Image (cartoon, rainbow, N blue to C red):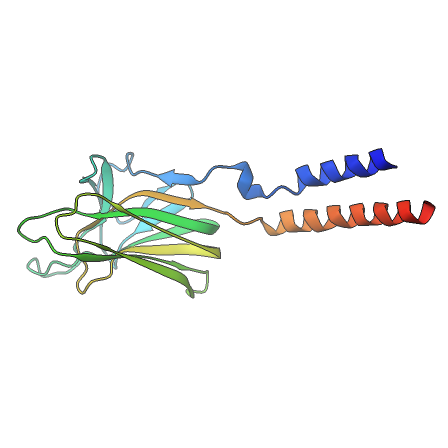
Length: 202
């Protein structure tokens, strides 16, 4: 009986392992993003920016290709950079992104970077912000977790936006899928039933 119980518990442990643990987080480094577009889709996520705006690949201050939301204003003298939105094919449990500002000695200023996550009903699930100082060449990593993330928005939270660059956009399901939870409940129920049976026959 002890062997049967141990075998069943081992099987349940294998079957009930969270699905998120089976795969590494997905990282979008934008190296394959070659030309400006209204949308850029890769690895189950679609990036857009503003209404009618363009998402553009550029060589970033970190030495790799990065993405930036183009100015979407009709007046060429108004410099407004739209935040970037990332829509997932499924739902996620974790999102992370590297954000940076090109250090311009002419226009350099402090920027408030932000990352906000939403569910399928456009309800905010959380927001994180970090300040990046003028002329700071390094990128800042913003990360946030929460169940049921359907899309994320990130960029500069300052008035009028800013030329904020995005790189290494990372996401993961992070939490077990409903089917995994059901399997875990069934498995542990079977273990409990077997344990009760063992006590009854002891």
